[in-house]
Image (cartoon, rainbow, N blue to C red):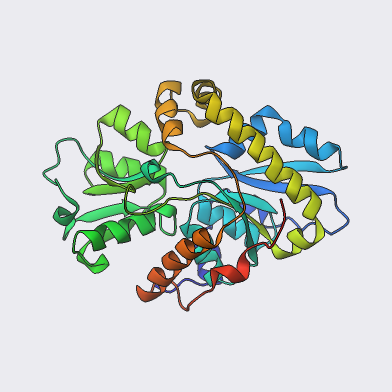
Length: 317
């Protein structure tokens, strides 16, 4: 199925994005950075600590926060000018760039291959990825786990067309998984850790020795050009919270627990599988991201080839 900006926008009808669609893009003179985040990870910790507000105040900026259920919705908001900055996994920016979004990769976190997995019920007869042939697999379309599924099937000698896919957001996918409406679920942390703890979901395959599972920080060309200093301060603040979370995993998990709605001990498992250490994109990371884009084009999931390097920030923090 070809992905277009129109189809992406239509698919988001009824989501939390709609109240934002009327928001006008920030003018160059507006000293504000509008940050899109998901209910987990470094940006949530950054928001809770108030570090970014303190650092941006010193250069006359303020912060506005908007929550999104997943990366594709966040990047559609970036595309229509409702947010200026956000974080997603590897796959959402590829779909967004293919749809014409003016996004720019500004930084990334190190690989976290254990932070996403193909799950099956504890008592499932499915023992290997090869056993998924003809089975129904749930996943969030265009999210980081989309590539994990493609590569896992390939590694097991299966084609993408050898399985059935049900494209569902995490909450709906969890319900379908528990009810037996799907045979497997491809998901990321902390939903992965929660399913393991609460319902005994079994890992069929995670990203180890298969996919890197990077987290990327993205902005727009307009914002990068007009607000470079604020962007650098934001990346520096992320680096500070990264170091704190890496050294204080248990504490970070307890702080996230009431926000995410997942027990702290479960979140601690997820955070231990996460990576911390924000840096600009290297040539190697750009090449890895290009390989994902090329794979999706070959499968017909994006309509035309894209060049990742064309949308990577040069210089910066």
